[in-house]
Length: 70
Image 1 (cartoon, rainbow, N blue to C red):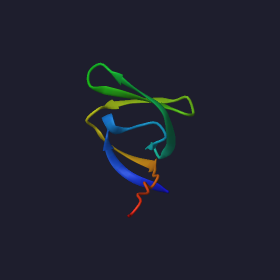
Image 2: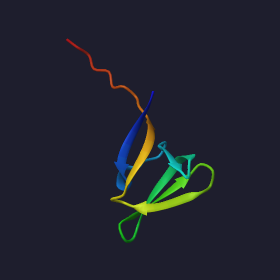
Image 3: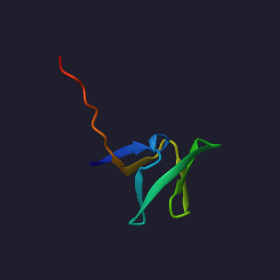
């Protein structure tokens, strides 16, 4: 299952899909940069830098956590 979320730049993680300019990009790596910025590395080789506090919409794979009921 895929869920759409609005997160801060600091909360973007690998496997998230970010749409930039209408084109979806899968994040494969993130790095913290100076000046409260974060660099997102995409599977297609492109990269994007955004503020850690900036809001961004992502699509994220969701894995349900099963709990046993006793």
